[in-house]
Image (tube, rainbow, N blue to C red; front, side):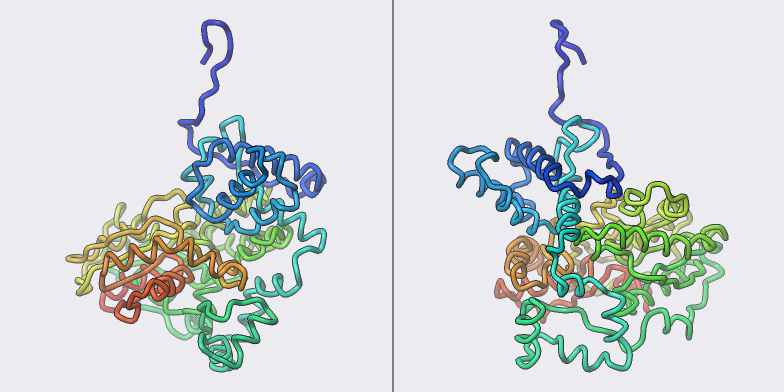
Length: 455
């Protein structure tokens, strides 16, 4: 829009939907420290002038405190080395990009703080500044293959909160906070269990004829197969034929450390495994929001040249999104019954980052005579970040409003779209003096829908 004097007017925000550019990790400039520092300062200086994100996480308060302490109220007074603390506090929740920032693309300021944090960590990784133990903690498949199965009892004993023998040792050696709740391991993987039994498909369901591959995800496969079985049972009741496929982890833990080459390789591997199913008309349904986000949005930005990755992104649904889609297009099979209590549902950041609306909330509101109250705020967990000794107290602080709201709701059921967030919220309730033992806490909303169906 032009003014009378010919000067172009620049709008503060944009009415257009946020767009994201591919991550240019193969460009030599991507890993250039001087160019990274210049871009870091360019974007953070705009953040300093805006400060709308002050209450989202701990990164922005750290940034603003550094600037305020520098004395001249400008970013240039802050040494570059001190900006590392801002990067380290980022959990890659994406909420600044999607919910707060008026300067994301297509705005000419072109801010994308989460992907800038990924670039910073990619440079740190290349320079050898990310420790071997931190990298080891992100190897979900390798770690879980050792702990899942016959050794699950020993692994669960060793990682249990309150184990005075092992948890102090884990904190000293691996930097995992002694009080952080860690995922339990299953005695048998979801994939292995699924090969032994499959639910009978309801031929009379309105959605009969749909076919879906469940991308098991590392959590449902190794830690809580009940999530997968609940999803399979609900879909079978609604006429959907399902297969369970798990080539490997989506790479979200590696993305958190900037290991983009590893993520790209995982994207290509999983996309190649899913391609034949997509060609046969199967939808792809991810059981955990972080993994759905990777398949739908992050992978196409990391390997934009891959047709297989693009096809997978277009065929992928989050499980709650898929159930709501069935409801909207064909209608659900009957048989849902009240739960006998109301539900507090935490809308996870990586569900919100999919920009699909509150699909888990919509899904749970299909249960008759059951009120569902959502909490749309970050739990503070942040994957492997939130269990580290340095960051666990910060994670509790960030998640404190969620814990307090859950306590205020005082509903019979508590669930989060993110299984790790659920555990963290329960710990937050305990930290606030609440009675978490009086709440029926589930690790995924699909389990409550399965319960309402009588499974």
